[in-house]
Image (cartoon, rainbow, N blue to C red; front, side, top):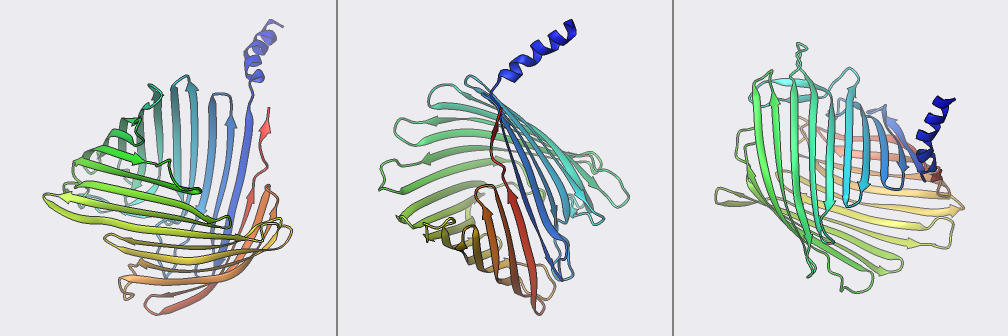
Length: 401
């Protein structure tokens, strides 16, 4: 009797707390004659209390490799567990990530210092983050992460590959509008089996601006970061300092049309030489119509252009037209230019994907959809094939205890 009373007194504070539960499921599947077993499943849950949050996310992904296009990732399982608790101005955030590569064909990786090729079998990565509000406009943050990777050679020797990353800094929301931040990071990689050890560090100085006095329905943000590095990469070359800039614009032209554009640029400074590391421009235009229907119809135009050591281009259109209640017809068309390593195919690969589909939404609880697509690509010869993709999304809502 005394034991039961003692247990009840321990559990009573937990029972008295207000707790909410959320969960979600997102399953995608499909295949064709070239990739007959493609799919991805995401399952997640969230428990939230007055001053704490507990999130679990599980992903299972399968992408098989074909004789036309070799892929690096085939089948893997990834589990993310994240817990955060607030204690006054302090937030503590431990988390852990566990990834396992499944199947017989493991992804191959090339080792540094000419140590050959290994097969990746997964990793486990615990982490811990701490944040604190010193005052209304000064914020401190720190984070540490540790990777233990399973990299196996052909003779089944484990490389004992580990990585450690520690970072921290301070940010200040100035009274004049811009936000300033200074942060530092140290990363160490080691493998006792191949006698390899590399350490590099970085200091970031950032300025971020988000103007408040803008025309109605307009949002603009921008940031500039200068990063100075100390260390070498896997090729034993000094890492160049980098200046990174980013600008984002969101504008609602009319109540039915909105535009979202992002421009990013990175410049490297290497021993007195300035060169462009990467430049990208991405834009998305959304037009909504038939908004009085159960499901609003829309047309989305999107495109992205990036230039670095490789060239990538993407442009497309996606349309959803509501037919009746939750039933909608889907239409898509997309063109992409990406690098390829297929022998005899040239440096770039052009792809064109288009096709129709159907979708049914059960309010905000569930969504089921299917697409029939045709893909054309130029490799050694022009390839043309059909595939089917389908998915199910389920969100039961929030349950309060």
